[in-house]
Image (cartoon, rainbow, N blue to C red; front, side, top):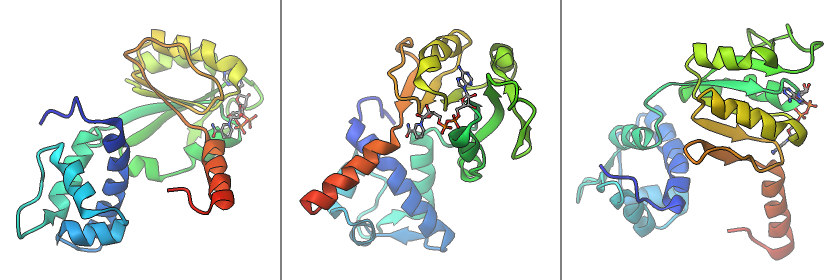
Length: 211
Ligand code: NAI
């Protein structure tokens, strides 16, 4: 399956499909038609068919989609069939909240280490993991096969920290710092700004609807 030329818009919709299919699977539903999935997810059946056609279809005329198969295939496309070790850098409010969110592990994202540059926080245990000083970050990443770094530090330190992360071989950065990072193109950066979502909500209040 060649998913290299899939549009970002389709990729962005896959996690939502994955969540809905996960719920169907948990509820013992074995197959679903594109019409029923469409009603459930409030997207058109043709959108669903078009999206899945990018990956070879998955469906069968008159049968619909096999929920478990589709769920597993989307997991593969999203790389969720592999485990990803991650570190959290910045053990403040946000870093600790993310560390405490168990559901990431269900998806295969394993929190291996938590780091901070404040000695007063180092040694504090968050969900069984002792916060370490950032001085040990490079060594830890190399030793623990860490793919992903989560940046939950203020923007002032983020660019420099990202350069260190790039040097020691992380493949992706989940960036919550409010600054653009300067890393080589082969490192995937996903910037998250919760306030963007809130502003979209505000737009929806003013203008009636967001979608
Ligand atoms: P916080 O002040 O509770 O925690 C920040 C932690 O980072 C502190 O423990 C501090 O010692 C540590 N730190 C600072 N510089 C560091 C460095 N160079 N290396 C390692 N550790 C370092 O702040 P909070 O609330 O956890 O927010 C963290 C950052 O994330 C803030 O800059 C905030 O603006 C941003 N943020 C972003 C959001 C988003 O949606 N993108 C949402 C909430 C916060």
